[in-house]
Length: 327
Image 1: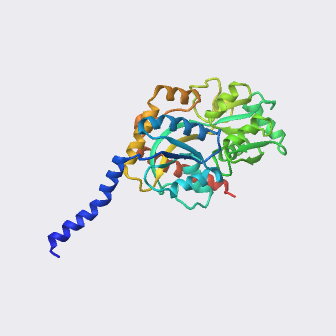
Image 2: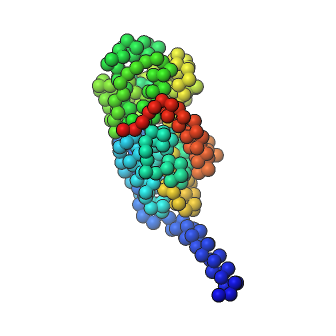
Image 3: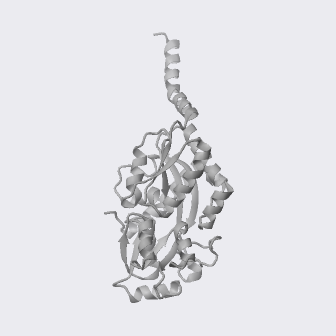
């Protein structure tokens, strides 16, 4: 074969994957999309996922079905996303727990950083320290005193071993000098149900679900794990104001696709997320739930990738030093 012919064929072969990705991007989406939410119905991840799916379908022109795949602090559902075909028809609602903490807590069959294509950050908000309404403590200082006086029977609900609420509880114990029993559930939704029913004493939860219950008087809200108050709930003090400085935790939500999903498809998904977050009604719903929306420059795939990497570098040493391991 002549050298010129060989180079022509070689360059054509090298360009084939890129051209194939462009072609798939142009025809995407060709059928309904499945958004896997790796937690139970009713929790913060589920609420955010359903709001986004409802609005994103208007941009993409296809129905987006939310599928709740629960277990192992979200790693079962997240693993399904990692193994899905990289064609954009299966995406995953991820968060601080599934795409940061689980990598330090569990022996996973996938890599939380390298087996996904970041699409966009959706929200980034602190947790809320909440408790059953019958608990006698009126503020965070009294809650800590009550926990110290009830070491043998006090309990905290979590969304699973190594999940955000569990890690938050471990840090809370270290900073406050308290001890209590952790009660793992298959998601934040079922855990919050038992807090609301008075079966569990306290929890660290997303504002997406806890604020409405606190406002209705079903649970008590003591503090937010941030340096400044939530705009949607200025009546709830920060942990600094409540007497426990340093308990700063941000529970962010983001959209991810399987690794090797073509960039044109990622761009379409990113545009759909941006369109949803730009919708005044969606923005109002999320903000009213206490969720803080990222600036447009923070919504790019590159920004999400950098943020996730920084969070891993920050939290993995903390989690490993605390000895938190998945069952």
